[in-house]
Image (cartoon, rainbow over all chains, first blue to last red; front, side, top):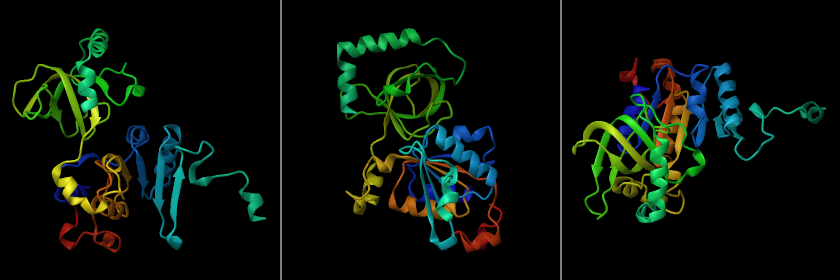
Length: 98
Length: 182
């Protein structure tokens, strides 16, 4: 955290930074997501991953996640797609596979 | 910004401001009037008491405007914004506190930001350079941050992480041995 803040300040001192230094808890997720324009989610805790998506769906905000497998980029556009669900969940997926 | 100043000058806007003032009641320190409707943007009028921040007077323009840059927990959206301040009871210096009535705008890019992102012109718009980016998790997130930072995307960064840097994070982060534990 400290390092990233330092990095931003050295690169562009005009950028405003807000920090959630203790990570995200259940209560803080909404505060975090509420007025973000884009959320980049790179967290390794599944519960937080899900909570962030849930709030992103509520407000609704676009969410990006990069994964290491097959260099895949996960784009979840809750802001333009009302049908979008966390992790692209869909009821149809069983049929697609079969 | 010019639009806002124009509107401020008009009689109708003065009335609007009076209405706002009637809506605003004395509040607790640092609290924001929550009656304010998000749909009023751009040019949301907000009242904050117990405000602490850095603000400067724009001496180049005729109309009395005060600009604020930075973040404050007491703002509804702590933005890299211009606040067109109508009323204030703060003494004339750069670091002080008091109460304000202001209108919020996205801050225009500074000369440094403009120069730094000169090669991005027409590729990354000015609006995109003022966005609020939230990054959850700063291990691989810090690499995304680095890329976005260099490109000049985003004027406000909101970061969340509880961990400090460890040597084993070195495979995916841009920091060195000397940064361990920070």
